[in-house]
Every structure is written in structure tokens, then in C-alpha cells.
Length: 230
Image (cartoon, rainbow, N blue to C red; front, side):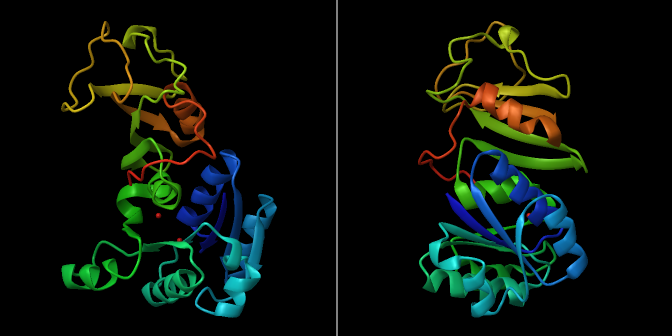
């Protein structure tokens, strides 16, 4: 799938990295030269310019994008980018900050496909909103630590295994477990992992891809149900 992300700050860049690791095509649009160079140093395709301008969005490939994530810290830029993206038929994800009033949220919520709070969801939450999937961000604990909820799928390598047989990377720990349709709780080591079951995991950002592969399986490129941020 193809994505355009407006904003190459902390969340925008991390979101782009997550999508690229899953094999997707990502282009960043950023006006700040320092952030542009940082993203290019990480071998991303970057267009330098104002994310609220249609000509710059077109240069970034908005006409062919499956989804556009407006992840800058500027609400007006984000909204303008989403309205242009909507005109081009792309899914629209808009960042707002947590201190905006509820009436501001309601005003914009009807105009875009999804609103995200990056302070709550981080890069994985932004990725979920753009792509959808079987992993849901719950909280950022520190710069490199995140709590996520993952669902067991048909493609999961551990489907049918017990929790005690689950071998995650050293920087990942299972915090809770829930059978499909039931609340999560303290994991029982003898519980079997079946389709739709959920695992809540604390993991370092660097190993999230490995954790997802182990629990969810290779779901890149497939249609997924949405679970869903310089």
C-alpha cells in the first residue's frame, strides 16, 4: 500500500518507519529543512514544502495514496491536508493535541476518517489508523517503550500454543491476556492461544515488529479491520 505522511517529526518519522518495515511505500512531506535531511538520512523519500498546499501534496503522490496521515503539530495544516486528500479519494488521518476542547474534536471528527492523539497512541496508533490491523496501541510508557494489544489471527505462528510456550524477544513481556469476547486479565501460562484472543504486551519499540510477527503473523498487504502520532 502507498502512504503520504505530512510531518517528519518524532511521530511522523516513527510511523513511516513502522509502515516501511511492513513493506509499504511511504513518502514524507515536511517543510523544516533539518527534519527533511534527517528523514533522508534514514533513506525515506521526502518532499520539502507546506503540507497544506495541494501542489506539494500532489508532488508527494497524493493522487495514488491509499491513505494520508497529517501528523504535524499544526491543526490548520493537518485539516487542510486531509480535505485535499479526501478530494483525491485517500483515507484521512488527522492529528490533534489532547488540550483541544471536545467541541473542536467534534467539529473535525465528522470531516476526516479518524482523529488521533499522538501523546496517547504514538507511532503504532498512527500506523493503525492509516492501515488498520490486529495490533492496537494502548500507551507510550517511555520514549522506547509501548504497551500494545495484539490479536491472534489465522496467520499467527503461535495459534494453538499455550502462553507458556510463547517465546517473545527479551525486551517484550506479556502483561495480560483475554479470550475473544472476554475482558483481559492476568495470563494463565496453560491458556491456549486461539483465533481472536488478545495479548497485552510491554515492548521496546525496536522489537515491536518481531512481536507482531510472532503473535499476529505476516499480515502486511492484506485487508484488515480498523482497530485504531513533532
